[in-house]
Amino acid sequence: MVKLDLAGLRETRWHEYLIRFLFGGLITAIAGAIGKEWGPVVAGLFLAFPAIFPASATLVEKHERERKQRKGLQGEQRGIEAAADDAMGAAIGAIGLIVFAAICWLLIPRYSPVLILAGAMLAWFVVASLIWILRKRFRSL
Image 1 (cartoon, rainbow, N blue to C red):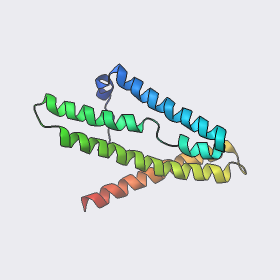
Image 2 (cartoon, helix red, strand yellow; image 1 turned 180 degrees about the vertical axis):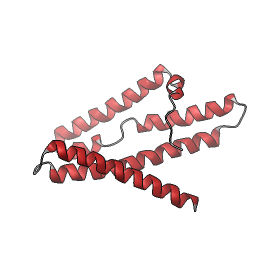
Image 3 (cartoon, rainbow, N blue to C red; image 1 turned 135 degrees about the vertical axis):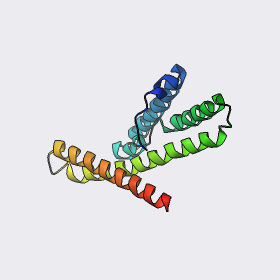
């Protein structure tokens, strides 16, 4: 079940936010260097990389493992499963972003950017939601 759990914000330490910030900055700097060399179209592909995902996945695994260990349980497997679920969500979101980018790339030069951005955002949401629903249905079979 998808739900909002703000308790996770209290579990994250300041240095973990710093790691995420540094990963995001590094990916952005690399994309800037690529853009300078090969142009903005190529650099945009690299900016689309989920900049904080590498740090996020390791932190999700660590937090889940620690949560289980505090309860006296072995948390290795749950940590791996949590990181895998996080990766699946990132992949589903990335597919939606591909749809968003394609719509913007094809239609913004010809139509109102505000309307196209709104439509592309709606398309991203619909595509990502449908993939999530289909994954959930086929997983239970």
